[in-house]
Image 1 (cartoon, rainbow, N blue to C red):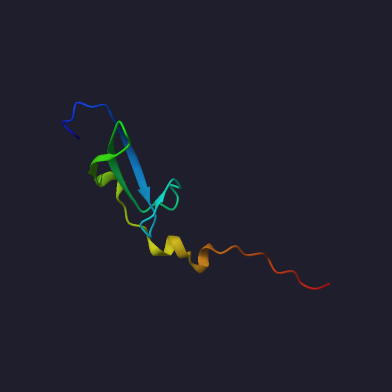
Image 2: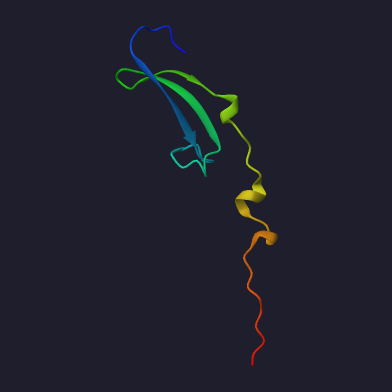
Length: 76
């Protein structure tokens, strides 16, 4: 990612719907790959196409067909 000969590391960062970093993959809606220098400063970023996805709003809110139901019991 960078032509800098200094040691660096590469991380994947995930973000939630509000744009906050998260480690929870289940709420992540966007990701990017970042290259960090030896001091941990970001020296390059790349929005990776395979880390971007759209979330179906129904899957976040659920729909009536997904709600748990219990069978009704007739009073005895």
